[in-house]
Image (tube, rainbow, N blue to C red; front, side, top):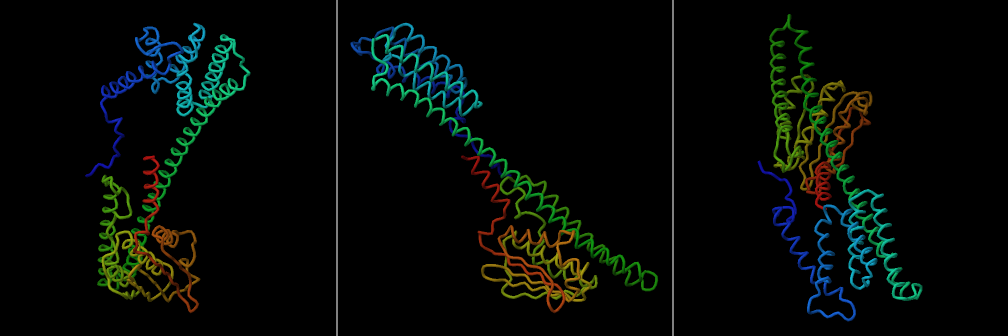
Length: 416
């Protein structure tokens, strides 16, 4: 059994200690960059000022916990900006706190509730604008000067963009989760329908044969015991075949191979090669089945082969149970790109319960099988009498079952 569980990303596969070391090394490289970027007028790069270096470290260290506790880190950064403004530090020294706070606003909006994102954005905007205006007033500058007004506008625009980016990320994640849930639910529904079709096709034909043979045997058991014995033999053979098919289906449901779980490629192995056996059992039950083949019989894709057999089986079962027919013709045409099936009987046609959808699931199940393989299907009474079922099943790779498409889409969504 092969395990197809997706591998986590490289960062998640690293040991916890290695990830912690990488984070702190990154912060250690950030400290000298912050030191250089926050030099004020009149300050030299060397010798290093102890107070300035300490402030650069204080700006960088809280970022180590940004992913784990973005609320607390944002509060520390905003408190640092307020403290620097109160202590009279020039804005050139602590301006990196502004973009760092914007990044945290984006992170909070994307990963927390909508209210938490709005609160973070509002608090960041108020602190940034207040400390910026206070710095201007302390230096005797006009806050309403065009240049300074433009900078104030850019500060607010940065917060707004960060908040909008977080909203977009949160909505995208919510959409991906909803899409994944929808794809999973669709796959489950398709699987349930597939199992229901398999059970119906497997059991309905066999029970019909058994019922007819049991009735015939009961009528002749006293007068013609040899025919009654033949009927019981047919019931035994049909029962054994049905039990075999049910065991195979249960085995498929217990299959743990993750490559194609529940795929239509698995399942009871009945195919077009079993049509002759089906014809013999139906003929023994009272309806003569004539099987004809055109083209060169060959190995077909498992889903196509099994679906074609189930369509023939369901059609013959309907003829046996409902059509009051004495003869049924099955034509299988092997084309280069598809397989065509044509089942015709000489029964009651429109008067037959099999002619319409009714309360049963036979024709609906056949139509669903063909639709899953991107084929064509038709069923209805013939003008000259009787009933006809036709189906075309393509052999190309485009005939991909819907459940496989749904699971593939779910996998792509999860990968994103």
